[in-house]
Length: 123
Length: 202
Ligand SMILES: Nc1nc2c(ncn2[C@@H]2O[C@H](COP(=O)(O)OP(=O)(O)OP(=O)(O)O)[C@@H](O)[C@H]2O)c(=O)[nH]1
Ligand SMILES: [Mg+2]
Image 1 (tube, rainbow over the protein chains, first blue to last red):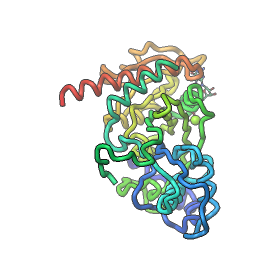
Image 2: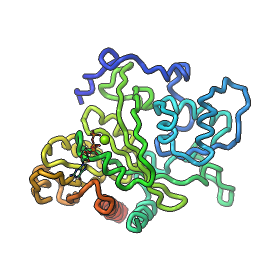
Image 3: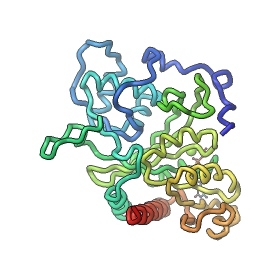
Image 4: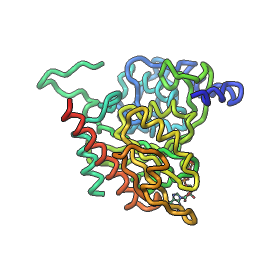
């Protein structure tokens, strides 16, 4: 555990710039946006209210087909923390639908385990 | 947020999206995590250099992670479509114990984990084994067979890692899709067994 003390702001550099993009906000209300939560655009475009940024539009373009949050982050080349904030904005603007994994905290259901097992056997 | 829809109520639009399941792939430096994920993923795995901060994790008590601390973590992100309503994601994650705070997020709701062991540096996988044991996440140990490495029977590896008898240990070649498939099938089969037992006792 104590090994985690070895890195710090001082040794690992400054807080990354992309956080400036979301004006220092690091949390969003409501959804958690798990790395494997699927996101899909609910609208084709965004109007210019509410300080919409180019990144919001880019995310919306990526999510024209359902896309997991982790994939959105890598295609945007942004830290997932930043992408979560941007997704939160889009959700507030009712511009996306989200499906969190059903078992975020507990264990996956036996149904899901069976279906995954069957699917893997057929590969 | 957790409102249950009334029977007969139309599904929320989000419910029409695919469901996601995930499996973690952990192991020491160069143990073959990226190789394993790309051998079986249907997409070219996304390789992300995540900058993680305490707040990006959305967790309040990250023991040892200082308020302003950030670190960069490489993550391989692969995908297998099980059917049109269910996708399986594989995460290759760094094996060092200092990243275990990130495993907390990845392990939440995960089916299980694959621990890749390299017999030339077996101790590199200790942190992963410790973590999954402590957390109670089912895992299998896949011994990656590198050329030139002395080969050890799975039972020798099991003893060296002092694993519980029910933990599957198997040899694999992370470069071969069929071998990786066998590891995944074994792992999920192990999960099914554990969960079936658990629900029988509940
Ligand atoms: N012979 C053999 N070589 C392998 C196997 N798996 C991986 N390798 C090789 O080992 C090297 C390291 O593999 P990676 O997949 O990059 O390992 P990694 O765990 O992702 O490494 P880091 O992300 O740097 O920790 C590569 O050159 C692979 O080609 C295997 O099963 N057999
Ligand atoms: Mg790698």
